[in-house]
Image (cartoon, rainbow, N blue to C red; front, side, top):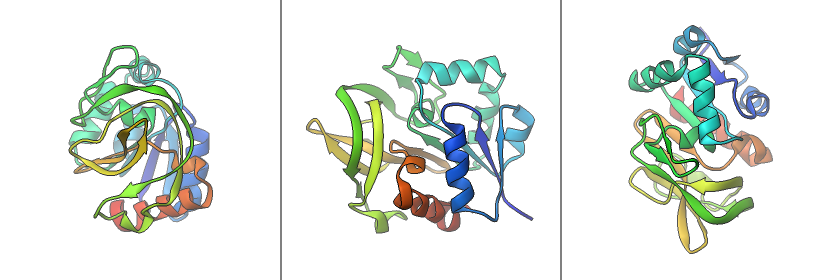
Length: 196
């Protein structure tokens, strides 16, 4: 039986769908904004691009807030990318927004926008083979290095969380779907060795 990966239809879901399809071709991949399809999946991905408030408003308007929280509490894997990661935390400074509370972290505003390719430091964890690889970042808000951080990069004299993990919850600050070949390789690693 194929693993089902649900991609929430928010942000740049089309780009994420293409990248995930390339990285795990044997999985059943669906793009959805329906709670029953989301809850029936084995893995949930919340894409980035947009604001925390915009993402949360999308969940509310589609009656998906409780579904996402319940999915996270079921210990099935959730991946949040950029703003999709931010809404999994407790609070975002972007619009003074209360988030879903699935991660014990807060989102703060950076001194200036961070856009480009940066080398990423991976700590001893299941992603260490990607240490010092360049990934694509595009964000003005971030989770600073905290408990749960297993990769980070340096900007503005701060260590910014690149990957956050708390049991079944994964948050990526960089965009694997925009990181070209290394992004596809990273996603393939995630699905083959970590989640599936």
